[in-house]
Amino acid sequence: MRKLDVVVVGGGQAGLAAGRLLVEAGTRLAVLDAQKTTGDSWRRRYQGLTLFTPREYSALSGMAIPGDPGGYPDKDEFADYLEAYARQFRIPVRSGCTTTSVERDVSGAFRVTGEGFDPIIADAVVIAAGGFRNPIKPSWAATCTIPQFAVDELGDFERLPSGPLLVVGDGASGRDVAALNVPHRPVLISTGRSRKLLPERILGRSLWWWLDVTGLVRAPTGSFLGKRMRAVDPFPNRQRDLDDLTSAGIEIRPRAIGAEGRIVRFADGSTLEPAAIIWAIGYKPDWSFIQVDGALDERGGILHHQGVSPVEGLYFAGLPWQRNRASGLVMGASEDAALVVDHLLRRALSTDTV
Image 1 (cartoon, rainbow, N blue to C red):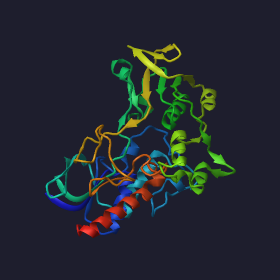
Image 2: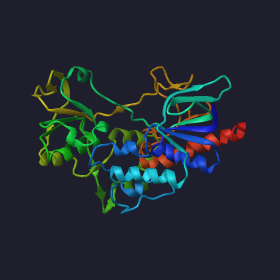
Image 3: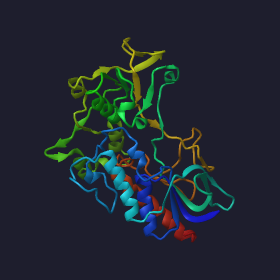
Image 4: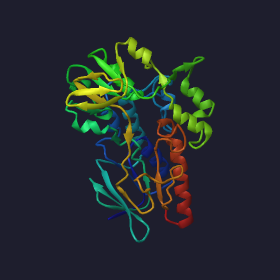
């Protein structure tokens, strides 16, 4: 059984940001990535996807994304960037390694097991597997006989059956998928609460520049401004508000409330028989692989303060709203990782474990 200082679970942007800092600190570590190649989780996402932050706000610390800083990287470009980042900083990513259990033994060390690797004993573990794991679907989805797809399962749109497409959820991904599909098929989008998108540019500057320089994007999660930011959940309007979608030929429907066979019912009493449904409501995390006393609450949610668990030696990175709005976005990954790794290294010095 291999003994390491740190295991990082997850090889996406949060795991790589933490991995780079741990490499520079001289720790013995492994970054366990379930993907076959670094960046593959991005490569598999739907065609036409671009990040909604410009390149200058989509890079990890120490390495810019090539190209126009004000332009938006597409999914494959960003996947290649992550792969290059791991190579540039010699981060020991172990690909094809799916973590199924993190436990703590009687000595206080962590035992990490899974598929594709032998069990590892580590003094500290950073969970960077992301807060977006399982797509949210209503209970009636199980009895609906219409072909259904989650946004992160779409890949090539050509696999969708011909005919009307119903997108359920009007966040950034839902609106994006609807807009990308409307040139090829009838598209309807089921909306929830009213959402106001912010301008892509204000006085010639990117929305993200303003959120950055005003400090709004880094307003602490529990602060008044942080709570307001979370309620608004801003993303830029790149021809994605409801008026734009309607002008493009997309039909706006209210909340979908049920289905019988192939017929979907909406809150206004209308019905529809779509050829396929795309779920874009959101995601819920699954932390059941963390089998450590004191790490989870009674409902299976993680306990932490800014990524630091009450369990000594256990950390989290890349969580939505881990510290602020930037958390969960690439622009906040390096800052959040720095805080977590600093705490980890100070603990190691005090206990002489690294």
